[in-house]
Length: 63
Image 1 (cartoon, one colour):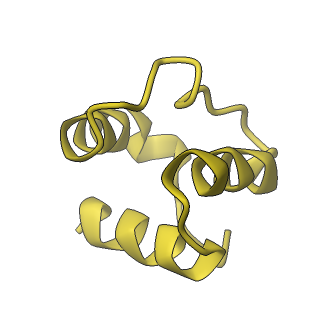
Image 2 (cartoon, one colour; image 1 turned 90 degrees about the vertical axis):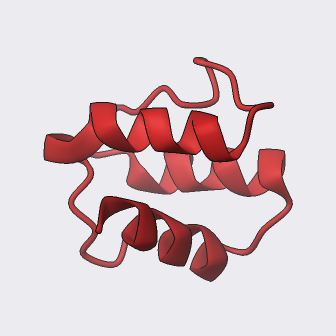
Image 3 (tube, rainbow, N blue to C red; image 1 turned 90 degrees about the horizontal axis):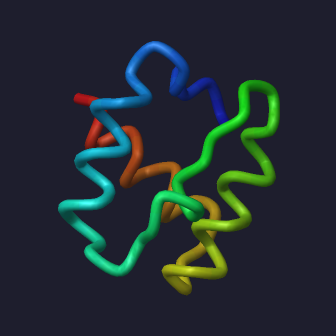
């Protein structure tokens, strides 16, 4: 996922994504270590955004 470190910040990121996008479910936000591409793909489908947009938003939320 372009060097985004999700693992250590996962609970924080999950909460922020749920706040920003109220329609995301816990199933949408299921993250499995090493399956970043699948996770991003799921978010792309649900939110209708590009991979770059999702990566940028995640980076912003982690900062």
